[in-house]
Each structure stands twice: as structure tokens, then as C-alpha cells.
Image 1 (cartoon, rainbow, N blue to C red):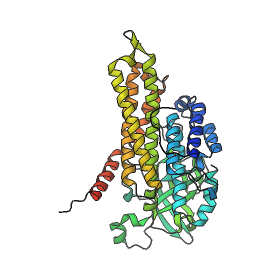
Image 2 (image 1 turned 90 degrees about the vertical axis):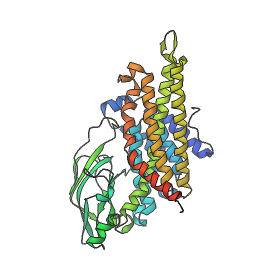
Image 3 (image 1 turned 135 degrees about the vertical axis):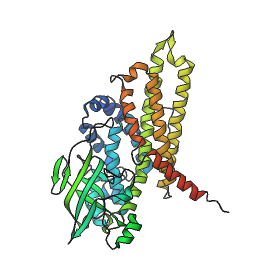
Length: 404
């Protein structure tokens, strides 16, 4: 176990869960991750192993067949999994966000139907807010749900769905405008959004009438996991599959999910940075120049000192954000800070490990090459660094409002 990124105050069950996940990462993920990533191959065997460990139900309450663990336990598990291969943590994260939204906002019927199957990994989740033309401006979505008797007809195009092909349940944000005048809908766009629970068959093409998953988007990194578009053309969804049973609440439901998702992205950044540090410090002790290991050169020691400090700081902020959410307090400030710091530090630690490897870091034979392509995704996932800074700045101004 590393000296860095330790978490004080964990109970015996949490320590046992983390030890089990770490062993799984060391034995089942790290030996195959780079090979699978280079082939852009979905890690089916790894996913099956995580299902057997119960990871897909980690935060789902015990009454629905899950483990009923805290956000902190979940985030620490994600940190370990991302240390092995960040793409695997992405497969779990989108599933978890949908399960969390169902647990917090679903009707009793929706919880009873979906959560036991999600805990077992039989139903796997994805969620969809973004669209091709809007980026971070969620309030400008154009996908629309129009009531048709006891159903809604959904039309529009969505973008950047992690697990878009392999999932069997997608939480989709659409505009409905029910009960609002055109003026009200324009003035308060957040009140006109609804989350729909869309069930589908895994795969690509037309996966159900009115719903098409065109195929995988080819990406620089974050391979293995499928990232897709989603096209709805008169997709019929029963009114009973409106999350929470009422329209107009979708934006707030999604933001609640994204808030815990940001803790997850921070945890991913911590895990990737830890692995980059491990690779850098190991290589520095093996590679010799000028008659001694490069770890004995002061320039490399300075890099290692900075890398270790960043790993430790990012982990501490991530843990603080998770614990605040677990205590029932508002944590958007802490989650934003943790996501921002962890993703930026991750990029810097990975680059320093890359530099320590010298020319070999540019070779696909070395694991650091994969990490170098994976780290940039964390700068934009669950809201860009710039969006995080806007959230942080606004919240700080609320907390430190000048009384003149």
C-alpha cells in the first residue's frame, strides 16, 4: 500500500472493500489495460468481475440488493479502479449517476423496478444532457418531449453518452414546457426540463423504434468504453417513465447527479495521478544516466516532490467533498474545487511522469503513453475547468458577500 493518498477514519468494512478492489485492479485490470486500450476493446471480462464484486450496487440501498455504502466508499473505489484503467471507472460512473438519481428522485415503482436489477449489473445505466451544439449550456437544449395521451414522444439529438451502446437504461434530459406559457418557458428555461428513463436494447443502430445509437465516437483516449450520440425521432416513452412522476424537475435532478459525478471525476483524477506517480518514481530508480539512477539527480527529485504533493492534495480535497455530501450538506463548492484541482493536478503529474520517462514515454510500449492520452478527458468531463471556476467563484461570492 502506498504512503500517499491514505484516508483516515475508515471503518473495517470500508477497508475490506477497498482492499478487495485494489487486489482486483492489480490482478485483473493493470496486466491487460494497455493492450485492451490500444485495441479500443470493451473490457467485458473486467466488467463481469466487477459485477461479481458488487461494485455496480455499491451505493444502492440494501433493500434493493445493493451494499448501501457511502459516496466516500464509492469514490475511493473509483480512485482505485481509475488507477488501473480510467475507462473502467467511466463505465461504472454513468451507471452510478443514474442509480443515484433514481434513489433520490424516482417514484417507488421506478425504484422497485430498476434498482435491484441495477445493483446486480443486469441493467446498466447511461445519462444524457449534452447536445452537439450547446456544450456546457444545458439550459439551451432543444430535444423535446411532447405529450401524446399517456405517453410522451421524444425528438432530438444527444451527444457524448458514455455507455451509449452497452447501456440498457438512459436518463435523457428533454424540454417539455408543460404548464408554462411561452414567456415563462423562455424566462425560466430550467423549469421546462424533464428527465425521461428510456429503456433500450444494448447495441448500435436502431435499438428500439424511434431511437438510434449511430456507433462509437473515435477518441484520442478514454478508449474501450463506448462514447456515442443518441438520436430520437418520435421515440415513445410512457408517462410512468418520467423520473419522479412529474415534468419540469429534470434540470435539478440532473444537477444533483452531476454533483456526485464531479466527486467521481475528482476520484478518477486522483487514481490516474497515483498511477502516473508510481510509474514515474519506479522508472526514475531504474534508469541510469551519468553513472547513477536518475532518481538521484536533484532535478528528478524536485519533480517527484511536486508530483507526490499534488497526489496528496487532490486526494484530500476529493475525500472532503465526498464526506460533505455524505453528511447531507450542500457540497457543490467542494465538489467543484475537488474536480477542478484533481483534474488539473492529474494532467500535471502525468506530464511530469511522461518527462521522467524521456523518449520511452512516447512509446506505446510504456504505460505512461496511455495515461498521457487519458488525462485530458478529465479537464472537460462533468463540466470543463472553466465551468468549475464559474461555480466556485459564484459560491465564494455567496459565502463572502460584502456587507456595505
